[in-house]
Image 1: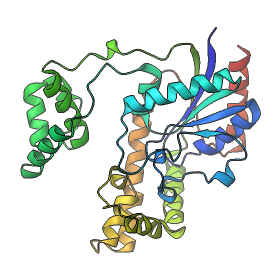
Image 2: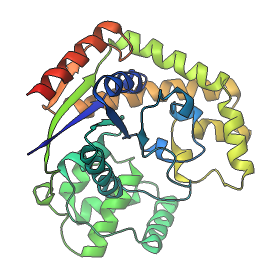
Image 3: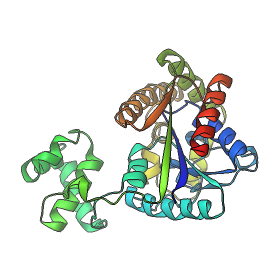
Length: 307
């Protein structure tokens, strides 16, 4: 017997969290976070993390589970989330995977090939090489693994580093995706939110202004005063890297806000492009807070559960 599993995906500021709460309330659901940054403790305002008091009694999982210094790969996420989802189903509740980190969702649902873990000394050597000669890692990957390099943007240092790490540690070609083990024992309903572009642009602008007004700069100042350097992985994300740059005197507050808004729009576009590739997703053309969208999504979940 296969258990039901619902995922709600889409670009940032599309209302995924609100829709998830409505679905959870209607169908005894528990929410499993699928946003890479919301895993980290202390990173609240810039991630639009729902405060505990606003979760309406709905259990949430994989929020605030990592220290900022901790690395957490897509494989780590998939293993942990699969255990949590199994527990939710065993309790007779509906697992709801919610978030916009597409690679984490793919790892969860479709699995990843067996890969070696991180090698920090190798990563440090690769980082020094990239710092000396920007673009060096992608050029090296192009020489060693042309097919992998073709799938990675020349400026995506993180992905190039991981691909080289795997190649150098295994001394073999990167494993094919077909070797991955998909999630078993579940049938899926994937709901995608796709608001009209101009409206999403307005929503991103409003959310960005609200984050800064709500104290994003102060949040980052407190994190730095707690002993963090500002170079930890979560600080590379939108809003946080701009706040760090502002606190270091590199950009003005207005520049930080404008940069965050522009880059968030670009990120939302990339998210939509990623999720559009997945034919399993049922799309709803609106925000997760729109009453008509909520009603349509609830009806889709109802039919899915009855089926």
